[in-house]
Image 1 (cartoon, each protein chain N blue to C red):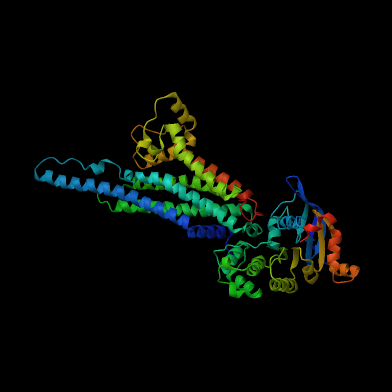
Image 2: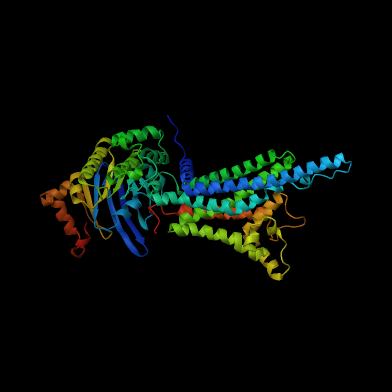
Length: 314
Length: 249
């Protein structure tokens, strides 16, 4: 006789399968993966070109008996080739996960099946756990694809051989990228469950994403929106004014896009020497704390969602 | 008379100052087909939502199959099946995929076998591999009934089950209800507007008016008192305030 599967697993697997079938979600996920590939290709192409020129020059210098300088490719950490990936995670990755989070709840509400789920013999906490597990699984897939692409890029660059510590740093970067995306996915889950209308359920996380990505960095780091999407210029020092010092201290922990940028730069070895996040909370701790808050919000909204309602109000 | 499988004690539900159900007390014995009559907005659906644990009562309590709806909602859910007024399912999935999902949520041990069994029982095996999105109201209602009996509940709640069905669909549903009651001993709690259906299907009825219970008795007692086949209609209209007759469907 077949074994009964746990309801949380049934909810998680059904929800994840459903969301993957949706065209908008698939399109955004494909776009994210494509950008990750482009990011890896750009890094690979730049490094391979410099390496090729160096090898030609070194051969010429050796032939003419001149001293051969060190390969410039080896002067920088191979991990920094992946710096563009942090921008794509912060932009398209977060946006994809917002849509995923919204749809994970929206699919039950729009289908009007909440009453049929609500009368099954499991608690609201089980339902919430199933939805959060589905979100975590889908984020993990996105993160693993990004990590896989980065790893393959390194394997195709013979001049660049990451050390064990650098592989660990790369894994750390993929981990915090997943954490960063999870914040938006969890807020989207919570807003989707709490909002009376589908539009508000989507607008809340999108507004939060816009605020954290473009508005807060202007207040805490004087970054205009175009600079905010450049991984290098986004790490410029703060203007030396009392306003920015105070704003970076007070609002810094809320400026999650900044925290993610500093954490990524640290892990991918492109943080300029002597530079660190001006916020009083270390970036990774900040992201962990934000994920916990977002998870709390999602849990609260999902466990208190009315299962009697069949659909959105509007 | 057997022990009550449903027992309501001073059940009350208030939404934003509006009392939807007020001081509702009654007991329904096991094996009954119970018809719950009332005008639009009388509080029938709210009562079912409380009994199925979808909504928590403002005050009062009830037991379903011996379990308190507030203290032990999970045990109540194990004992019940529910078909809402408008059966909504995942339109992009087939009937089997929908039923498999609900069977897994209900903790059914061998979901595939049970789904086949229920589809055969309800004589809708031909719908198994079709997407629900293309179903008529009658087909949807049958799959709705199928999802409600997957785990063989002791009590089946039906909210306006015949709403929007053609005469053939109504007859088919009536036959299914009678069969579930006779073959599996399921107690049926049915909200309805259709007095004629009550007469053909139910063993006892209650009438709710503006959230309050105004009548509860067995069908044979009603027909014996009024003496002809329009007895229920006469009774129902007599219990409905004259000024509210237009609300009666």
